Length: 366
Image 1 (cartoon, rainbow, N blue to C red):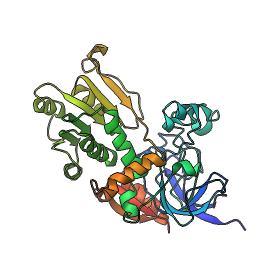
Image 2: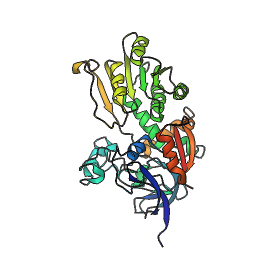
Image 3: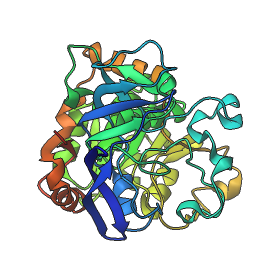
Image 4: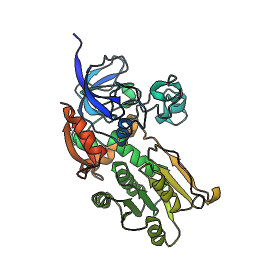
């Protein structure tokens, strides 16, 4: 008899449900990981709403924390029973994109025509969990190319402390890295959801000495201060662009990070940027963007606009874990709610509607 597991699957726009699925077979390069903790990402909400297409019946989720249940015959350097994470992006590092320095796009040109409604190309093919293959909101997940993607969890760190590493922390830090931050810079971070909060922390670790956090939620602005923000602006209480220009003496910020994915935040992030500054875009956009002419200086402002998909792989995960193990940052405070896998529909409802000051939920399958 085939062994079965519970998994949260995408059914149709507006419907993610618990279903029974077979526990995956393990190939030579794979690892079967028993999930101890996972979470819901803002991208999963885009999937739920039908704004980002995936195949019906796909197990969703891409942030795994767990224990190796079974190793493929070709996977060396790990052991069954070991606590591990894997990045939301799990490249095999053999593709043209990976060898050209963009492992997050691993395999982007190899997606079959029409898969997930992507018309033969998907610019996020390094993101496989809950996108191209079954994801992590389940009792077990099959990690492909496991030797390249598994990272051990030190004994002193809890599941909740490392839960941000696979995606949120990696993405937020990439926002700071892509912002070209130098020691002494002034940086504005638009939106203080989990990714924006990690971008704020990453900006502080990168050497920015004035970090301006923008959000409309006072609770999130308080968390931003704890993670390194020097100034917190509530866009419901002031004109953020005017306030930032006053704070910088009219110069504008050295870098801005957009962490929401809306036209208004993108435009504001560009409007506060100094000539020659960098806009680092992290948001997942569901509509076309337009560039405000004056803020873009008609294309003559020497601006840089960088976009990013979070880096994955075991070396990236090792570095992020090092930051947490050093004690310089505690992201466990972002985990505000806990649910059983059986109750994940309620978890989605809470997270999608941003009730009860939710930041991230811990989902426990077992």
